[in-house]
Image (tube, rainbow, N blue to C red; front, top):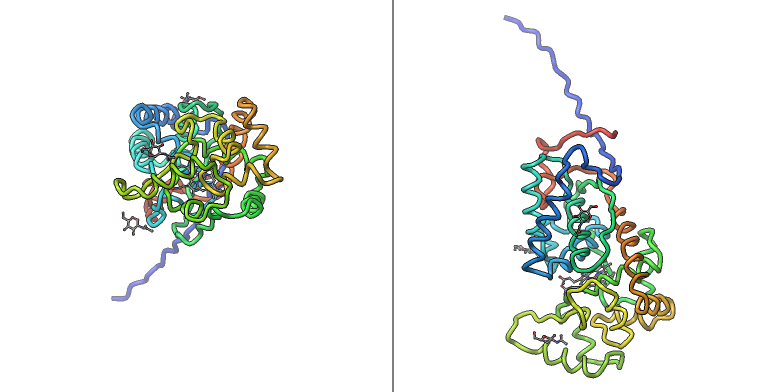
Length: 305
Ligand code: HEM
Ligand SMILES: *[C@@H]1O[C@H](CO)[C@@H](O)[C@H](O)[C@H]1NC(C)=O
Ligand SMILES: *[C@@H]1O[C@H](CO)[C@@H](O)[C@H](O)[C@H]1NC(C)=O
Ligand SMILES: *[C@@H]1O[C@H](CO)[C@@H](O)[C@H](O)[C@H]1NC(C)=O
């Protein structure tokens, strides 16, 4: 018996989803998103003040490095991702495939900065998570790069010199592992306060901690304030690039302004963070698991409103 076959044609539409950032993006689709994120960050912060630094650095990497920082391989020194996983789980139960990982990181960072003493700035949401998951694109300059090289990177991202010096204010919290500034200790160039130099030499050679660190802001390492700028003016910067900001003629004046005016710094920081937070994938998806791109079956087509 002969049979006629009709072929069904499947058209695969690879719908490009475009990010459309606005304040309160989840107001209707996941109204409790921002308060759930805040609750989790506050809980963690109450027992672990270092979460502010962890999130801040994660957010910087998420914005500057196309590949998602959480993807396997990029685990070198970025901490705190388990908090993002936990929040994501809660939000998937509350409103599945709705709140992007990039937005969770952005909002969690905003809250952690505010809890540590920074401004609680209003940040637009609606980011999408990247569809690429390769680790090839990590090309951030190292901590010994010349100021002009780092400046070029910021310019390439549409940020200016003032934004750059402002965002380095993120180093007012958190730590650096000794390997990132070891050369300043083994062959000192006179740019570091001698007392600090001796302390760092001692701490970095101590064996009681396998991977010793130093606070980037030696005075108030858990407070989000302008102390970082005061410290680098006193030649108490830890990273070479931090110290150079206070000396380089392109940046020294901005450093002095922030060192003597905390309010100016806080406002400038909030603005620069919003600007940096806008550097996101224009097309992408809402990941179900922040560590991996979705399997095709979970890839939801969304339309642009
Ligand atoms: C190209 C510019 C930058 C360079 C070269 C740089 C370099 C570094 C290095 C080497 C560390 C130490 C990492 C470790 O030992 O684990 C560090 C830590 C940190 N960076 Fe940056 N950074 C830059 C820009 C930024 C920006 C723009 C921010 C945020 C706005 C930021 C926030 C942080 C924070 C908060 C830490 C401490 C992390 C922690 O305690 O876990 N950095 N940075
Ligand atoms: C990241 O961590 C995983 C498991 O903890 C390890 O297998 C992998 O080699 C690490 N990658 C890098 C680049 O350190
Ligand atoms: C910041 O403000 C938002 C509302 O805009 C709020 O949801 C959040 O809890 C606040 N965060 C902190 C740390 O106060
Ligand atoms: C050296 O280590 C001690 C103990 O961990 C710490 O309190 C101190 O801040 C460290 N000093 C420097 C310069 O990092």
